[in-house]
Length: 258
Image 1 (spheres, rainbow, N blue to C red):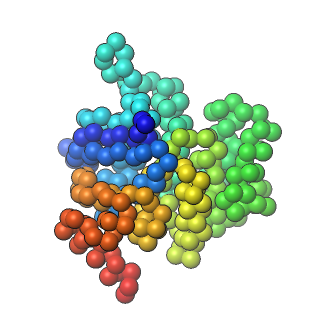
Image 2 (cartoon, rainbow, N blue to C red):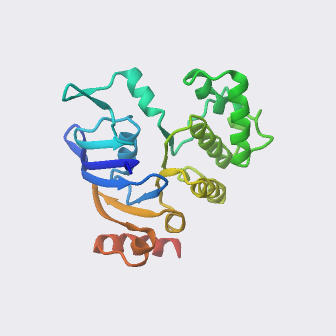
């Protein structure tokens, strides 16, 4: 079976700063793959590379067997143009830390915008899909609310519905609860758990360790642009092999119990 994601020695620099320093990992179809680690470790940059928002400088990166950002042309790699990049990007739905909703659009309009403008669906088709998705994320009856009329958790759930509306092969979550007040975190995590139970392929960058332990099939610990350790969630949280992973988990556990 072709991996959903395959990274081999992926490197990314911004000027002289190397942010990704040889990342190699594999995500299987239907797997929920978590990434944890301290801030500045390259986690978000790796997601942005998967979604073609950043181009890697070296290594190989594939999504469903296709080069990300490039295609083979007569035996050589050629960068995709903007139109080709947009088509490739549709296969990976991205949910950001900040909700990035259009303030002048209702919840339903935010969800329907992509299917209408990008995929060419009729407004009626898109609205039917949009209502169904908003219902799935617990926002039935909120169709006509504007972002300013929604809580942070509700806005993030609209953003999740918007990502799903494009029917991506893979969902990418970049710290989806980090911008939320603590009392709103659970409603977003419950939505992601529901998606996991549906068998969707997902990569979740998160600082919610209990969520990663309970929901993710495997978890990777990243630090300073390197993949320190990757293991099934029960193993990484129960008996991590690397001392640096143990130190990180012990520190976070101590902070949450204060």
